[in-house]
Length: 366
Image (cartoon, one colour):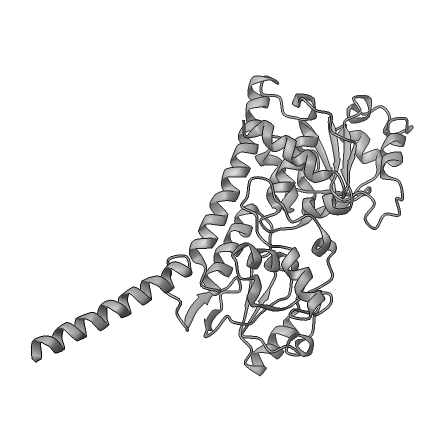
């Protein structure tokens, strides 16, 4: 009888172990713990008891959450971004369901649109029952955080995205917070592979085709604001083996035509031409630069090496999530267009950008 009891106990233990293994497999190989602690970008140790209902207060964490496979747990998101209506595909990465799942969730009422992220109030955030609130690295205010603390709301704040490593850290942090660390590791690995292929291709051109001579690039946030070395896109230029003529302006700074003429860049790339600068026809604006009394004599004008992004292409150039690989590709495509076997349009917009990025990816990944 005792022997039978022992066999029964062993059998139960085996079944429990098998069940635990199955749960781990469904969660990327990790045990789905009900309670765990993470350290967020503010250095706060945050104990998380559940992630069944998640609120995201920035488009970047929302994209990352979808990339980690937890879009079905989203109950509320900030909704001040046109990115929810854009092409969900990212070159070189496994397809995820962002932004389709979020747009569909808002449409069918399973996800609440909370409005703009900038200065979102605690009252707005707690209007939806949630287990975990995820903030982006900017756009929030301390008063909101203090109010959430007083209400006992569980939240994490991600890193301010000033470098690609910050984006990787945000993916890792959010992965830890929602119990998807292995998925986070896989996503970062995919991004590093794609970016590595792009940067290696750029370096090869500079070394083998240009004798080590880098392009001098003016990277413009708008038609009048230049991007400096402290901005995410400005740091990206260095990885692409290009020199930023406005490296020393900090994050960004307003510049004059005379300043640009003095810098005399080989190439000008507008990250978001037409955004907030009153330009209704970016193509015509760039065309006018070629004959402008001040800018017509610079190398970029003489070689007609001025490019820009609008619409969805502009968003690709400015968002700081897994979609940043598209920004690396687009900038590299604009800068090194002379070394491609297809013609790159002067301005890329909503309808055409992904097709060109796909062609570019075929070149660098061959």
